[in-house]
Image 1 (cartoon, rainbow, N blue to C red):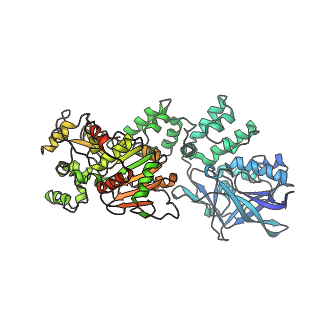
Image 2 (image 1 turned 180 degrees about the vertical axis):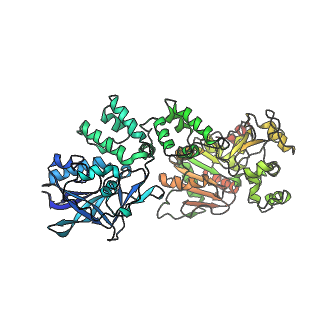
Image 3 (image 1 turned 90 degrees about the vertical axis):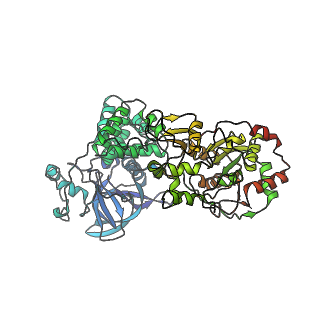
Length: 620
């Protein structure tokens, strides 16, 4: 893409200086094309041009032979060669610059959506054989992190480099007389093989030939912000053609990324985008990764088989919608901390008052709230996990809860969960803390509970507004054939008896309760629910967790970034970041909750009968 420098020469009526010239080293150069002024910019705006150079920049070009871009180095030995385009007054100069913005895909009001940015720099021009420095605009890009397909044009002259190709000799011969090319050294040029296929250009030509208006196409590809309301069809056609040339073999991918940024559907068919990816020699797995499509079941397929599946998908009219419904979303990230907040310790009256005043309480719980029910926590000092690890020859107790270990030998994990698995013969008894959360729900104060526990005591307590972030024992799945067991109780009973449950479909596959182990994905809906509820909560209660595992460990920071909701940690020790909470009540969950109930004057009698009503726990 061409790059321009706009000189500051005069001032308008407001006294603010504005550019009256443009330095171009690409197709907008005054000496580009058989007759110069390839875009007709100077002819239509009464402009003139002179040779010029800009110091402190390096000139680059992508291997697909798109037009060049510069990167500021600050080294005065780095020089870019071009021409200075000038206009007689500020009005015509502004009109010319606006048109340059449209051609280059630069929208100063929306820099995050622009192909190029622009800023003011210094350029040197020769006037009467003397060098003169002027202030100027520059359209620039950052140097890509992947330099495999990027070439630095050592001579700094894009036009001379292109004219080195013998196929362009006739253009060189037709250039205006007096153009000095002596600074160009042919040895600096390493010709590139153009293997790209202009997929977007072909699609654009077909769309225009079929009668689609340029404005419609501009809107479809998400570029409406780059044109004014009174822009003509010719202007918009010019912009589309410039975009097709400038971005080259990555045009479709650029449109897809822009659509993803604005959370809209790309304005080009999926089949066109997919064709561009294939022409750029992408593998099918790379395509799946870019689209954030899950690949767990695709890892054993060949690239050819995966491409066949993608090709079939491209034939669907609503392919982009299908992809959006299947795509894995970006992981949640920790939010910036609140400022100037101190933690208040053991103020039970204040916490009770917050609970009384709140109507959308978000609750996050960990293993600590089940300790009084006889469920061992992972970090218990009794060495429960260490003994199992030693028995089965595992190097680290954490390996017990890893899906990789389970696939090799399911017995360590089955031994571990025998103490907590719900069975038909051993109903669970919820703790006082579980009953307190149920009381919040019955009083209409519970927005939602996110539990990291797999013991299903929430179900035993009668809590309905709960998400089991690490899955549940309600259902099970064969790890070999994928057969899904809707009622997991028989599987649970088999494990509790010390036996390995096998699949009745494939015969020898091991059936695992749908509890999430390390290196397994979270159940569907967990991320979306956290995003929604952290923005709605007017109070956060975190009970019995060390906040070590994402995404649940991010909930306090997300609530903090969403508003002014107070955040309360009820735990045996501090957890999370120093800035995650405004209140800390130290102690066991049950003991602390009992004191809160006393301050509130609430009783648990009204929830006891409901807590005895056993309901099936779910995983989402």
